[in-house]
Length: 112
Image (cartoon, rainbow, N blue to C red):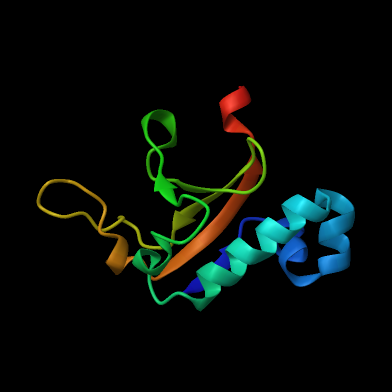
């Protein structure tokens, strides 16, 4: 799957492990790099659906975003490149048709 980044810092975390460990800490850095690797190895979003990390769609004011667990309350948030996001006849997102994502942020959105 094609993976892009909303900003240079998120991209640097993925490309420079030393920087990632220094800025995110060893545990979050390891999870971040694992999730990015899983996403890059996938052909579609469906391929990661059942991998560790609980990949899931968000709702309400975050509808159109997905999240995957990192450490503790922290999640990696991303959005599909596809615009509009593919949906079936029931309005549910079609994960197998999503072939690219943009990493948006690392956040503890539960604590807000």
